Length: 112
Length: 351
Image (cartoon, rainbow over all chains, first blue to last red; front, side, top):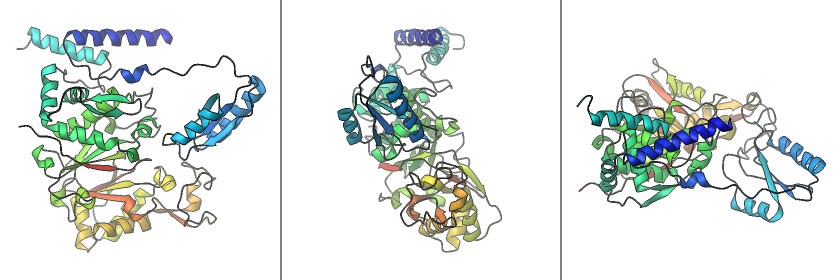
């Protein structure tokens, strides 16, 4: 799977390079695809998990189980739980700030 | 000339644009710099001018990037003001573009054009209005969709998680048939002048056809439409929100001939497009536990199984437009967790 993806990416890049040589205007914004993921934690032990429920059916059940597994298997602290107003919209800034202040990492889930 | 170096180069470009991931699956016009420049000049702007940051990935839409996508879609330069206005409307926070583009739901922005620009650009408002055959409808709608993918980063199956999608994700742009409507058009209802041209964006499922060919009174007609609106499969019986009804001119005239104003149509549909509470427990979004996470208005009695639950919170959440040609088919356009947004087209014209 990794190989397939990288072959496709290489092919795309080659095609884009050739199109640039032909003088076409690139219609793609590349800045958005270079967003980096946050630094990964080395260990979960003793860390505070946040559980962000998006209020969609079953998401709460899935998160509850994940929270339990984090404590039992990885030795995390008791999870901090919070809820979005509705799953269809991004979380309010205040919710994100609250999570950032209280937690070391956050899990959110869709339980469809 | 056929077989010339130039035509071979054009074919090579078309193939390369597929490989580069620039297309929607159909061939695109090569965005040659002179074409892109002409599109940017038409709106009196500079190539690096910022149009906005497009969700879901926040891609930077410069004038040149938008123009390149418009060229690829097959647009003419004079379509640029409509495209830029549509992008501006989609960036209205209430439209919730980021959510719409990532959802498993299949909704996608529909552009509804009002005002004199429909005639100036030959935007179809009549027969086969949701279908193919008109350059302006097809390419304006397509340009917007290419922007969402190429600049916004809504990549199907990667960031765009739609389970099914629908054909409107290639292009989805109609005009209101103001000339054959018995009522004021959508943009006038929303506070604009009849002489203004506007774009309304609405996150929409594909049109659901409503066939009632024999009807001669609004009560039977709107009962048919209300039945379509209360189908359990759409989001509205559960989440409510805004939806659109596209009446064909003949259906609209049946209503108007019986003294139904647009607000009467909205009121009748609000009162009649309902489901018994117990029926909603069959599934949809809440499942049997309809009380959990429920966002219905407080005046709906959740304790009673026989209470009739509407598909929206108020009659004005049902937007009514008149569009299409002869015949007696209207359409319901179910939506998603989004509110439509209307903007006046006021960008600079060619000198």
